Length: 371
Ligand code: F6P
Image (cartoon, rainbow, N blue to C red):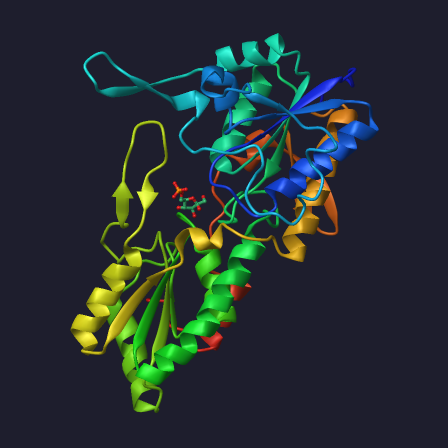
């Protein structure tokens, strides 16, 4: 959606959902690009909570993002303005007088808050949830540019999201470390990684880190296929095995491992690795340990790839505003950064295609995928 260029004086930046390495690089690039154009930048604290619950923030829910404020942050993990996955304005949690919870839509109020603070445009960094909100705000008349962020890499219409490369790199390093201890003890090590309903992190790290088996949400697994793989390795002299399990993986005909379901937020996944480890220990009789990499994949310094991508996205978001764009997401479309409608980017989740080169590569390498 394109609107006529208008005079922008003040922009806001929000970071929503789970953090991802590279968010600070986006903030810095957007603020510097805005500053070059003579625009002021403000950060909204904790997603949109800074505007929806300003009383919770002693110094105010909007943080002035001066050049000083964004100095030296390119390499830092996390986000200097905070984030949340509990403040979705479309499904804002509201406690009823009887103590139960329901959800309300606070997007009209949010648009009103942008007007009150004379914010002319928004750069919204987020995954499918946050960019879905950005799309609604754009439809309600806000000038909005989305920036695709998630370690899960499950956003459609962009070749990559920043944070994913860092997560895969760190998971691969962990698998490298786990190989030596697994081999020394002749154990099975089951490594659970994040990724929600997509297997990108598990598949990429599992291949790079030479796992014996990789279980992803896209391929419901039969534990017997993993057992066969472990026994085959055993017969050929490899007494240990590394099994990578995506947190969203589920057995054929079974359910995903869900830790918690709460009003106003996405379900929390967890425990898939332990379930696989228990089953493998029971069936093979081998000493088995489960390791959950969890939030370690979200923390730390972004890789050079993610930093560069994040800096390109942040600067491109401001250029897009300057060109009169709104309702779009900046996207990696090598070799360029292009613009795609937010509605398209958020209409479906990008999962691992079963006929993809990576799946074929895993099979050619003899990695068991549980089917
Ligand atoms: O979407 C990013 C992600 O890290 C998922 O991989 C994971 O399921 C989820 O967020 C965890 O969220 P939380 O921060 O609530 O533990």
